[in-house]
Image 1 (cartoon, one colour):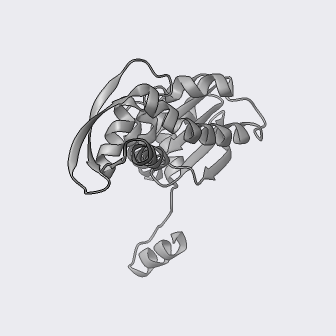
Image 2 (cartoon, rainbow, N blue to C red):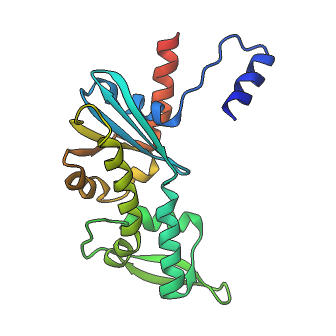
Length: 206
């Protein structure tokens, strides 16, 4: 796909064509390049990218099939199995962001769902505890991918910066930190890190 894009752009008369991965752009947009020895974890909708930098230089990267919508699917499966209801993709994301905590408390929310049998709308009350249990196996998969990359690095990262829409989940940073042994922070407006990074790359190219 990348090669086809480049060739098409060149045939259209574009003089200089270069590609930037979403993970690299997110790293640039999160400021990780100037953060010493740091790792960016970009949780995208279709995949997740991990990029490690040391003293401003990229030293390792990895792409995993794990994606932010894996949490959505886990919540959807739980709703169907436990409550016999379904929810729209937008409602699944709302549930994930509002009570998809990996450090659950007594929080809860009313979710707009549909009866699986007839498709009739209804509201149900969901708690942080039950949604946490539904998404915990998915989080474990993500944590395993991060730990696997860290073990290949020639240096230990000082911190991990989370970007992408999946980084907005409540509690994902504090849940990951004790597993990897370094501080984990969420970038400012993590869903816009890629856009900021692309703007930075373009400015440097100019």
